[in-house]
Structure formats: structure tokens, C-alpha cells
Amino acid sequence: MIIAIDGPAASGKGTIAKRLAAHYGLRHLDSGLLYRGVAKAVIEGGRDPADRDAAVAAARAFEPGRYPASALKGDDVAKAASQVAAIPQVREALIAFQRSFARTRPGAVIDGRDIGTVIAPDADVKIFVTATPEERARRRLLELQGRGEASDEAAVLADILARDARDTGRAVAPLRQAPDAHLLDTTHLAIDPAVRAAIDIVEAVRAGRKPA
Ligand code: DC
Image (cartoon, rainbow, N blue to C red; front, side, top):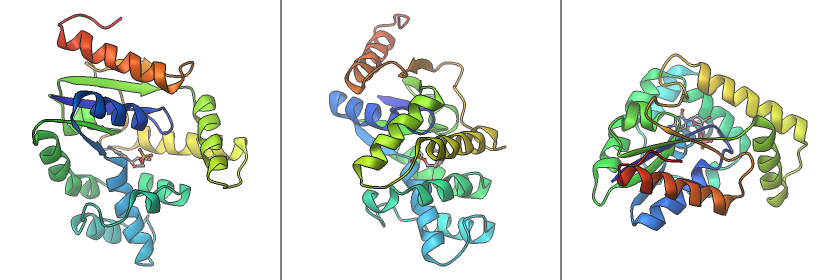
């Protein structure tokens, strides 16, 4: 089984994807880490993430697992990832890895922005996870505070809105809900009920029912 989870930053899609994978015994790929890894390699090489040639070269040389996820979590890397992700040749260089991950038994849950639309358009189940920008900013702020990083809600909200605009506005593989994806709005859901709702969607699709 292949489950595609798409949605904007801090919508809850990563945690939902991880927990769905554990629940169904599937492999999990956070595809954002691939774009973050490319961005990190560009920054580490002393180049600008807006530098196309540097970003494309880094994507073509991409090795999964080169950086631990903990090294890719910062907001500077997130912003740079959103920049390199807008370059078509960067996306192209990362497609084969994601498709082969999806096809490997016993199947996978992949989360990102274009999984249901581009990477796995034939996924068994597609879920588009969203929440209001204000609620996502609130969550991101709590996360930053938890890591001891100072920030304020207005700055976090501005970052989220800028990243949303770049991810939905780019010409290639923009963030959008696939026509056959099920919408899961987590604005008023804590993580446990959100995961439960995602499992309910998967179960309904598998049983041939229309999710509630
Ligand atoms: O999910 P994330 O915040 O780790 O993603 C970081 C950036 O990578 C995001 O702003 C856009 C880009 N991205 C993408 O374009 N396509 C994906 N499938 C996953 C992430």
C-alpha cells in the first residue's frame, strides 16, 4: 500500500505520516528532508540557495542520509529548501529516489507537497492535511520554544505565509490538493485525534466507503 500525505508546513502531516506508517507496518519517507538536504549542501558549500547551478548540482549529487534529520530542522534550512524546491531540475533529480522508495515492499507513507499529484499519482490513499496559517504558526512557535529558540508569533506567521506562497505559487509541482485526495483539517484537532481521523480515512478507502 502507498499512502500519500501532502500539506503545508506545520499542518501535522509529518507526525500523521510517521504514525500511519507505524500503524500499518509501512516505511516512512519525509520528502521535505530531501529538499532540506539539498539546501544544506548548497549552504555548506558556501553558495546561495537561489543559485540555480549550485542547487541543481547538489540535487544531482544527493545522497540520502548524508545529514541527520536533526541537522536539517532549522528555519534557515527550511527557507532555503523552499527556494531550491522551486527549481524544476532539482525536483527532477529527486523523483527517482522517491518513486523507488514508494514501490519498495511492503509499501510506504510519504509526506510532502507533491506526493499525491506528481510522485505517486496512483497512491492507494491520498490525504491532504491542512490547518489555518495562524494555528500552524502557533504550533511552530511552541516547537521553537521547546528547542529553546527565541522567536515571536508574528515573525513565525510571516515565515509560514512566505513559505506557503512560494510552495503554492511555483510553476512546477506546486503544493495543491490532488482531486482524489481526502481533506483533513487539523485546525481544531490535537495530534491523537488527527491520527485517528487519518486512519479512519485509510480504512474507509480500503473498504470502498466514502470517508466521513
Ligand atoms: O515539509 P518541509 O517543511 O520539511 O519541507 C521543506 C520545503 O521543501 C518546503 O517548503 C517545500 C519543499 N518540499 C517540496 O517542494 N516538495 C516536497 N514533496 C516536500 C518539500
